[in-house]
Length: 182
Image (cartoon, rainbow, N blue to C red):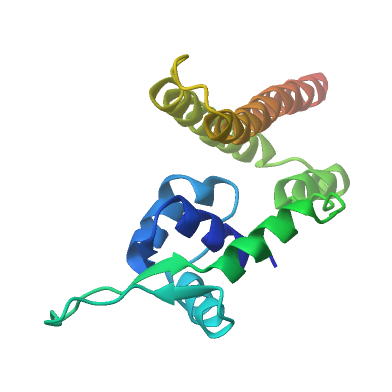
């Protein structure tokens, strides 16, 4: 149920159209909460019906294909603030890769090294992207509370990618030990 809250957060940061929100999800929020273009537009409609956001007034002379921009209403800000205060238990991890590795323990590891190496490459690339974002977006002089919190979210992503790189490296070494011994 967090997509509406992700959208409220993004709109409070900057009133946007659905297309702009989609692009912003691709560049930032989507790294930890993804949504399709259709999901975003559907949720915008629900949030507007619920009185949490509104479309900004269009210019007097409408332009064909003009995008609606949305802003958060006070009720939306209140909902988001209430949501940040609610308790929520951690969600169990669901990883097809971990399940596939468990299955490989039963049916054999043929092809697993290639897949683990592919995942390792992807996680290294994501880690490099996150580290680049950190260098560009969070120089030492950016030290407001909002900047510290945004940086903390990015650091969470960095640490998760570091975990996956280390874990995949260990998994590959264990797979090599096992296949080398056979």
